[in-house]
Image (cartoon, rainbow, N blue to C red; front, side, top):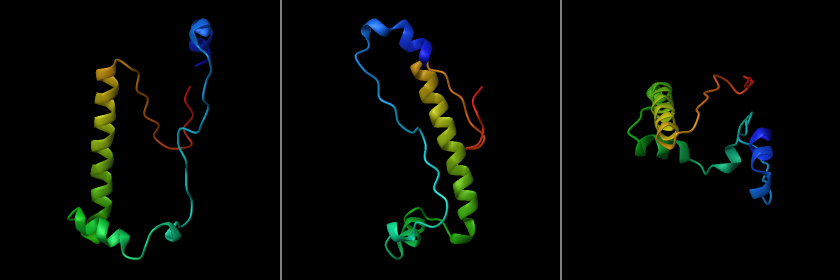
Length: 88
């Protein structure tokens, strides 16, 4: 990013800095009304016993979609296997 900023410094008026991801640990039950998770599962036709597979499949689909968006835009794509993986 610093190289980009240096290269285009004459055309840049300012920058924004923010988190690119947040990691929540614990329970956020106060953010969800009673029964919201069950309604989500029902709306998606997913039984609770099948939730793990649903999440894994959704993750695979989301990753593929993002890879395609990056490719279509001619942008690089780097997948981090975990939140603790550091980009080199």
